Length: 364
Ligand code: GN1
Ligand code: MG
Image 1 (tube, protein in one colour):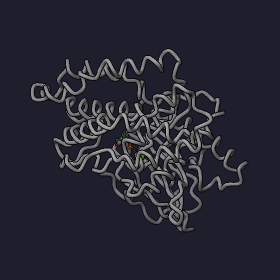
Image 2: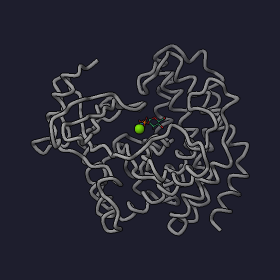
Image 3: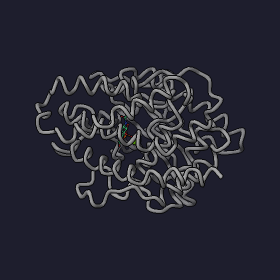
Image 4: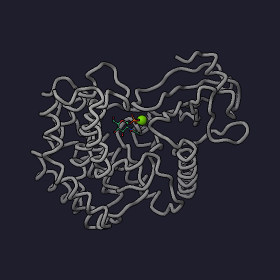
């Protein structure tokens, strides 16, 4: 564990307004380590240790974040918004660098903390889901004319064909000797392989367009305004890159509509809430209805199944690999997550007809 003195030294590498007075851990991220930094002037900052096992090219990732946030700030300013609160602000190093690499090879980056914001681990009301959908819709719209090529921060992140390559390799390797006990769970993945690849073919042949998207739109990656609960700022831009808008929609549905927790041990609590689905979809389409292609609209409901399936695969694959990717709180954690996300997937599958109808209704 890194000591406070070390953290303060790291903070001093960055151009904060004044010296740090406190550095404390923040939030439940699965990948990076996040800290909140207090300073003498009262301004607060977010310091993150970026996980370079997950993100092999941190310089490329930070370059992405800088160019995306600069673009967003321009848009927000043009529209009369507050660019310091509605977009993340990268705090550079005192010598202008975008990150700091410490003696142990860890990468650190800093942004301004946005005051008056609140985050949620789950959506408790359809109103919040509506606002969340509207926020991601706006985010995608603001990035629609962003043309700077982005680095691929994680290869094939939502590309199921690539995920199957990794999956097949993980099964073959059986690094933790767990495969023998997982025939049922592996069957969940295999029985849907073809259906998922068929969908992905539409992306590969261009029927579903590629756009600049966020790719990790779960509710905890959104800052809401403390007073109005409107989306204030979309954060965690580490995976901002070329992908499909469907992936942002699907991942948000996976998170907002779940009546249980992502790692619920009581599967009877887990299901997809049709009310939350309707609310999020209404919010999202209020911003994106006129910009999506017919094919995107047609597969909107399916994208929730796609991303939830992918998440089942990723949690199970990490369990098979011996828990090397996601942070876990206990040895079977990734398996518990796998089962809970699979229950959510089943719930989506059984309500799929109604989900398609809801999308149609929200498009009218
Ligand atoms: C990770 O980093 P965080 O907690 O926002 C993961 C997402 C998963 C999510 C599951 C880079 O998101 O892809 O959907 O956990 N991020 C990365 O909760 O793998
Ligand atoms: Mg996050």
